[in-house]
Length: 270
Image (cartoon, rainbow, N blue to C red; front, side, top):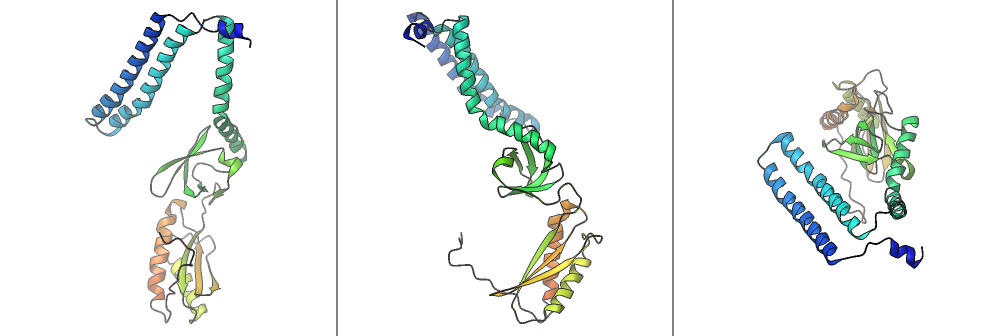
């Protein structure tokens, strides 16, 4: 674009246009400031869903005011010809496309997810260290609810960049593991039998699925793991807690001692 074409983009700027632009910008800033003060004041006097609805209006009002101010100010300085509009819209489209490239990538990944089914509603997945139950799969992101009842939005784009751990993969079976750490001097066969009985007698256990007790020798002692399945994946935390509490109580009746594991020298203790 040469100098004449560049100059043709702009209107003849007058003092009245500058005053009008400053007035519109000032009014927009005043409206935004008022909305940031009045809406929280109003929300504090409401309850439940009404309070959340009013608070959610704040970013929407701010965006609408800014868009309105831009639509008012831009024609004051730019000549509204077809050629100028095409140039402006082209530049704006390029900038928006670059800014939304991650969003588009998530949309494409959502289409791939709908075909490959790496997760489904009801699945328990872990993405980037965040573990929870899939509640909703949108076009851009998947919503998971953590055990602490926190809603987390995970973009589908993680399909390209990270690992997705699916604990039950669309089924009703989810393996749970309860850990026990004992000093090495004990009867391992007796401990395994006791821990198997602990799993078999749990009110949450799914008896149709296998139950196993595995062990591994470590420098500090013996590591036992009960591996079993709850009747419902949503019972996994109650199930592990039940196995841990009753397993610990049963082991205390045996001539065994629980191991005291010292942290590694470079382990973060905070």
